[in-house]
Length: 402
Image (tube, rainbow, N blue to C red):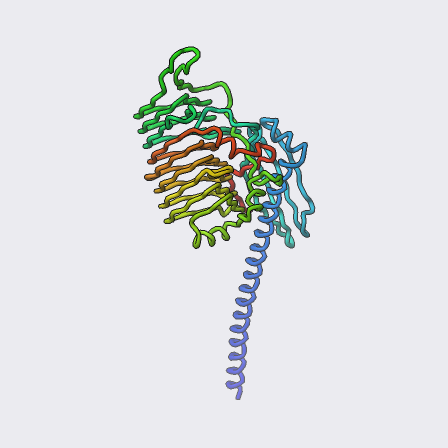
């Protein structure tokens, strides 16, 4: 009996030890899951706080007189503001708008969220610019890259020509112009505020047209051009009746990216002004489409393996995006204005004809044929509304987590 009692005691101790080990394992797993859940919540909340700070910064640039004056008129001005507490309990965020040039700045926002004794941080940094030139388009450039903080013109493995019988025009860049393994023929000047680099390429400038004077004195290729080239403003999403957003809404052509994607499945011809809101943009692939008017997108516009026609009608026409325009394996004919807030890119067997002009912050062209028939009247028609409520264009966006 004593031996049996001892055996029972040992058995109970072993079982209790195993149960305690299981209990500790379950508790550890439970606390780990709670910690993961808490961290995910903290990271998500602090990220949305930072995004809210970005949107407030953009709103202040557009609407607050002091912030807007600093943004538009200083080269290194700084605007700081914060909210502590933030919009929810245990939250806050700080914002810095640091000018890098007139009408160009880096927005840095950090969102904070406190749970217990731990604090989560998410930081968002965003580069923004705003086109400030007002009035009509006075440049004689069918391909125009302008500031603030302009990019460059990159033309490689391309044929670029300007059609006769249209307004005289050439190429102007607020940055550099790089022409390589290409043939470029203009009907006026090639001018750059920065450098012009031509290698393994042919550049054809027009000869003088007699009598001289008062005839045309011939084309000029000049780098370090002393006058700044400013990207014209355009009223994309303002509240006025002439903004593209308002015009599209009046026509019943206002869509989200998802809604327009659904529309593309059943429709290939679009009459009037079509506006696509949000950062999702427009992607058209393996499809033939016709726009009798204008396609306007807050996000990027991408064409791949497609045939695209944009026809001028009784109103403004063209392709307008506040982000990027990407053209790959596409035959595209545009009557009107191509206006690109960030970068226009054409590559891989793209055949592009533009009767109007290309106005962009940065141009990258590779393996494409580009014909520009400069029509200043259609360009100014598309720029209707001027810079009265020109949008702040978001350039680069990156995030950090702590």
